[in-house]
Structure formats: C-alpha cells, structure tokens
Image 1 (cartoon, rainbow, N blue to C red):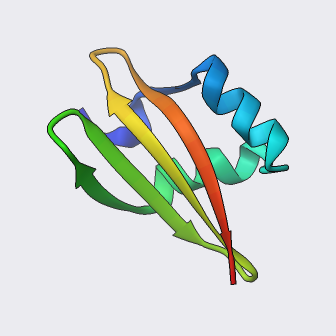
Image 2 (image 1 turned 90 degrees about the vertical axis):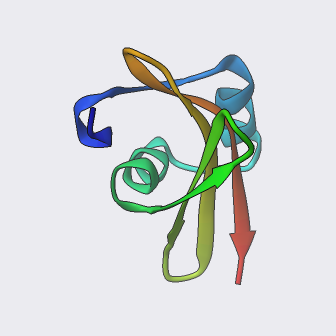
Length: 77
C-alpha cells in the first residue's frame, strides 16, 4: 500500500518530542507524505524532509493500517 493511502498516527513519545522540540504537526505529516525514505533496521523507516532552515526526520513503523511514528527530530542548518 502507498504511503499516501495510510493513516499517520503519532505515538505518545513522538507527540511529546514534537511538542518539546516545537515541531509543527503539518511539517511532520508533510515529511512523511513527501519526504525521502531510508530503511533503518528491519522494521523501521526514516522519513526526512528539508525545509528552509531545518531538516525534519521521523522514525516510523509501517503497520497494516497506518504509519506509526515512533519519534521526530529537528536538525537546524
């Protein structure tokens, strides 16, 4: 199934990190929908998207019914 067809759900940890790091939910969703992907281990995918002044990364797990966000990070440039 394509990633734009799956629901995106944040774990409690990911939601807390997004709040702590002041990462807007719109950027997280955009990162997953249109960002670059990289396999991380056997079970996880890292989505990355570059914005003007920062890079947003999301570590996720693809489940049968959704993309489950484990954590989110921001790297400022």
